[in-house]
Image (cartoon, rainbow, N blue to C red; front, side):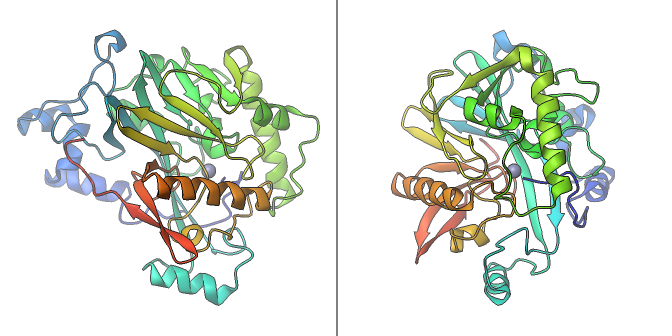
Length: 360
Ligand SMILES: [Zn+2]
């Protein structure tokens, strides 16, 4: 959902490189252990790397204690190893009009204050998901790609830290064709970032962006951003043409993944429900962009939405389902690793972050 130019501050903040370097230099912090083999062996911890997809593949050692890393987080969905892999983070300021453009300024500030969040900016994370399912290695969304912004475009580096090589990825599911979800699928020279992967995207989404004049009149963003979105999406989808698999809600890619149509943010936006045993997880995509604003007030939108009314309907419908079925939720823009649960609260909802687990 981020435009060509974020038009906001880029803030390395306390979670940035300097802190990580400080941790490594000080030899402190278990989170840093997975990044360096020497540090791992010095600590007596096995390094989590597995290059052979046929012999287990990425995520196969997800149950290993202390297997988490700075930019990746291992989880399990039943018997499916899942790794949330960060593409980075950004700060968008000011909050309005990109976030909650229809809210009164004092109401927006009040919701942020109630949630102990800054009132002058919104911090968003970019959380892709890698699933090892049915013999496939499937990545859900591919981040922004190589970027001028220092804090995003981190996917390939964080995948490497998690022990995953791009060639091991056999399938990519794109929730929608915005920059921060799709553009990382190709390198600046047009080569596929994941050369062995089929790329699954909704036919509606594909056809919208590849049409001669995609209707973005519902989005409240500058025309230059719209042009950059369209030219970028057309370029990336064009480069991937030979690998594209156009799908519709309900189509089966692999057993255990249900594709759910959640249009509004974009015309062909997809969410996923992943099932294994009794576990069911909603991979939400961009049903929400902040864990406070759009939960407390699900009728508040983002300026990036193509069709605000439809986006609100999709959000409410899937949040209702997640709350009623007590689904675990992986959400692209929630605070990393973006794993939590949705409950009802008053006339809206609440994001309940799942406690960090060291043992996946
Ligand atoms: Zn997004």
